[in-house]
Image 1 (tube, rainbow, N blue to C red):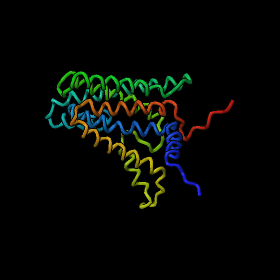
Image 2: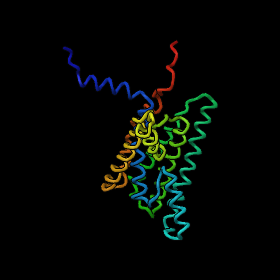
Image 3: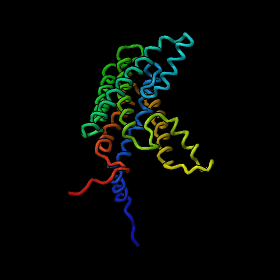
Image 4: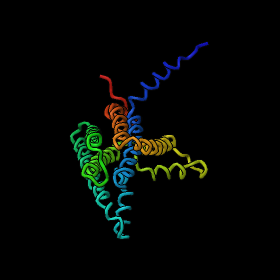
Length: 241
């Protein structure tokens, strides 16, 4: 009777999955909740990557004529995200037209996250301080880059942040309504990762603004290998020479 070695099996599993692009996407899904927890709870109530939330809050502020003190936070996040999306789109389109590497934008995003982490560690940002506004800008900028890249080079049903359509698909395509619910594991995994990371981010804020950002940056650093070099399931193997 052959007895399997759990350590060997785990090692084989890790080697097989660490080289896959979708592993990196799952990892950066887990940083989105961390980052939004920081921005919303500690830096003035804005979101770094959920522009629906920022636009809604901005519209409610304008419509009610109240809480104008928060308007600069919403506008900062929206503008910074816009510039990040523009840069991310430029990188993707330029790479596509020239035939060069399309995922290099992840390196730019990583650098923005590192800068945000350093700023949080050195300044102790508050919502009404220049460092708080700058931190929201850096985080929203990095999320804009990420969304632009994932939009062009993502994987179906693996959402890294905007969960509304993914959450809807879990139930709208479920077997209870005679659907076949394709790739339900990706959908459920994305939602659970996002939710769990937001919970962890909120808890870590008790130890300071920088702590959840350090965790997010660490996760993203580990995700760089599969993001940059990982193979997608829908890509054909490279030809052998």
